[in-house]
Image 1 (cartoon, rainbow, N blue to C red):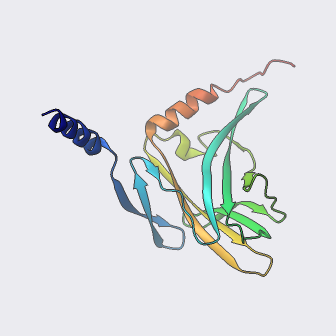
Image 2 (image 1 turned 90 degrees about the vertical axis):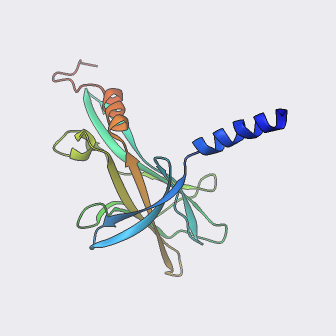
Image 3 (image 1 turned 45 degrees about the vertical axis):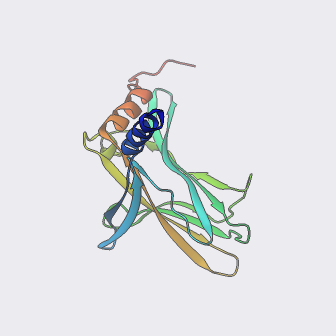
Length: 180
């Protein structure tokens, strides 16, 4: 009887576990890419040359103004050397280059880079201020010293709630920032 109770409890937990699903998302060039997702999170992309560790948005505030930038981290396979790393946002109709690192450095077995700062305003980052869920798709391309290129696509989803928390975290912009 006790084993039957544990089995029912265990099955209850298994039933609550997020299921893996696949999702097709349109990208630049009138194509679609298939992504795997568990719950709200997309599985980190990888190929035989490198794996994505991080692809996300960060905030920065200076002189009362809010900024955002993308943060990317990849982990090259042991036999992969980096000569160039490019990250493009392929969410829209045309790819937009956001990072081009011509001298990539590996630190603690990873390459990590941030995009330039962008003012966090509805005019410049409209998707962050929309009430709808937003998915951004990035193409990360590694070029090795011998010219071999490999790419992966990484999707990142922001729910309406996550975007709202992001905006609360940034806080309101100050019209006349305090003197330092």
